[in-house]
Image 1 (cartoon, rainbow, N blue to C red):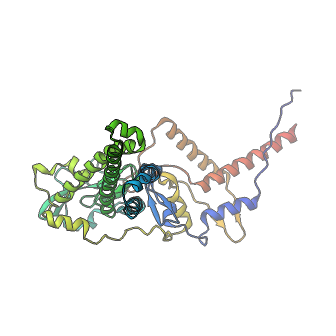
Image 2: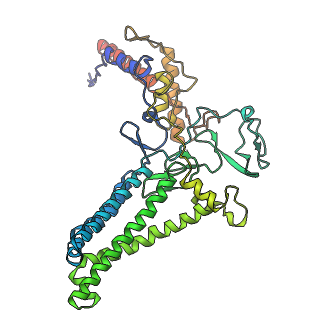
Length: 430
C-alpha cells in the first residue's frame, strides 16, 4: 500500500479573524486622516503639516550643495580675512554669510514643504448638465461614440475676453481650471502649474512660486557673495606675497575651489533667475512658455509689467484647498477602499457579507457563494495575466475588477476550512 504524506494547516483562531474584520468594516473605529489615504505621490511629515513631493531625498542634496561651500568659506577663507580686515569687519562678513545661508535654507523648505496649489480630486466625474458656468464644449469634440455617454475632453472658457481651452483630467475627474496642469510625478492637478523642480522635490505652483523665485534669486546672491570675497582673499595674498595668481591659488587652494564652484553655480541659478524674471514680467509659467509660446499670439493673462509683478509678489497667497489633517468623511469600509493603491475597489458583482460586530462572529459563507467568489478570483487573475482587463466606465475609470481584502480573507478561510475537512475525510478513509 502506497503511503502518502499529508500536510495539515492549522486554522487561524476565530478571534483573530473577527478582529481583522472589525478593523476593516467597523464604522465606530477611528477615522483616518486625509493625508493617510491621499492618492497622490506626496510624502507627508509631522502629521500632515508638511507636504513634500515623492523625490524628497533631492532636498538633502540641495541643502548639501548650499551648506558645503559656506562651511569651507567660514573654515578656511575667513581666518585669512581676519588678517586682512579689521576684526569687526571680518566678523560681519562671516555673520552675513551665515545668516544669508539660513535664509536660503528657510526659503527652500517654504518652497518644498507646502501645498503648491493641489486641486482636490472629485469622487466621481461631473455631470454634463451641472456644467452651467458659462463654458461651452469645444468644437473639436466629435460627440459621443458608440452610444456610450462620456464627457468631452476639452471645454472652452473665457479669460479676460479671450477663449481658453481647458482639459478634462481622467485621474482627478475634473475639468482643470485655466493654467492648471496634472503633474505626472506627484500625480496631482496643480493650480497655476509652473514645473516640477527636482532640486526642491516639489511642484512649483500658485502657492509656492513666490518662495521658489526668492530661493533661486537668493541662492544666486549667496554664490556671488562667496565668489567675491574669495577673490578678495586671493588679491590680498597676491599683494602680500608679491606673487602671481597661480601661486596665490596654491597658498589658499580652498579659495580657488570656491571661486570655480560658485562661478559655475552662479551661472546656473543666475540664468534661472533671469528666465523667471522674464516670466514674471510677462505673466507666464514655464509650462506655458514651452508649450504655447505666447510670443506669436496675445497672452490672456498678461496685465502689464507692473500689475504682473504685483500679482506675483504682493498679492495674497490663497489658502490651501486641502485640509490634510482632517478626518476622512464616510464609513471605514469606504475609507479602506480609498486608501488602497491605485484606488482598487470591490467588484459590484461580488455579494457583500455581513458581520456581527458585537459578538465578533461572521456569518458562514455558503458553498455556492464561495464558488461565485472563486470564479470571480479566477476571472480577475486571468484578465491580469493576459492583459485584457476591461476598462471601467468613466464614472470610475481607475477602479479595476479586483476583490476587496475582506472578501479575499473570507475566500481564503473557507478554502482552508474546506481543505481541512477534506483531509480529515481522507485520513478517516485510510
